[in-house]
Image (tube, rainbow, N blue to C red; front, side, top):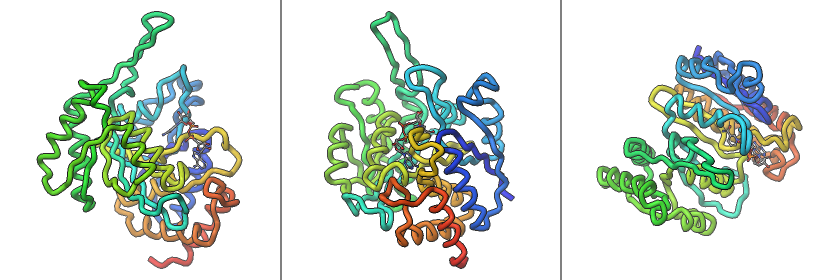
Length: 335
Ligand code: NAI
């Protein structure tokens, strides 16, 4: 039996993670969930929102499924999500964005993979207020981290038969920091002559994405632009309720949805569990349960085709109804 760390998170986290665990169990996958808690409630009890036991559990199991965790805005503890990525050196954030059958959007030809550097940039959390009216935030970009994320993007492109890697920066303004990221991408690109290499500034990239998304293949970005642009690409395929993500490192990988804890719909049985479910399917592929992952996706698409959708996709189904229908549909699939 495979052991997987499960972090149920907060906000809509517990609702959607329970839905996903039920679906995985119904698909016949034998996983022993090592349940770990983190976040604001844990900080009150244990003095830290990310206790060492959580890190130890993920290191031991090498794989985790994580629901979203709320980060206080403008004050309070540092994001648990960012800390986790840093502590486990989950250097690559992979966010594939492809049209989903029956989820109607403005475009029907989106197939973009966002590769986001996951450990530095403004997320280093080095901020100070030298006086009451001034705030400084330090943006860290290093050669080592930039080279390894560029290599990850090009390796991904080769392994997945993609044609192009497009590096996205603001190197005209942040000449040293984004300049270094760009320089590293150019250097790595030379080792992959079979993959087309393209450069674009992040502002132009956003405009192009909402006008002609079909022109993009693999996007390679530093941490902050990757965070923002991947919400934009999520919007192209139906919104945050359907966008999956994986944080990949050499010692462990953590699979989670792109979205946050959605406090506005918490506890109302309204959340779409699909983003976490698709992330979990990638996790199943990662642990060798490819057949189960395919089976779950087939049941999910069958559910959508029958018109059962959550509110974010224009439907009326509750999270629980949507989940139960997926489980029901699993029953009719062989394999
Ligand atoms: P959010 O992603 O939680 O929500 C944005 C909008 O999308 C809201 O209207 C929400 O209702 C909707 N939405 C999100 N997921 C949905 C789902 N599965 N089904 C239906 N609708 C969904 O972003 P927001 O409000 O900016 O952040 C809330 C909290 O989440 C913040 O504390 C933030 O720091 C945290 N966060 C955590 C992340 C993580 O744990 N990896 C990632 C992003 C944000």
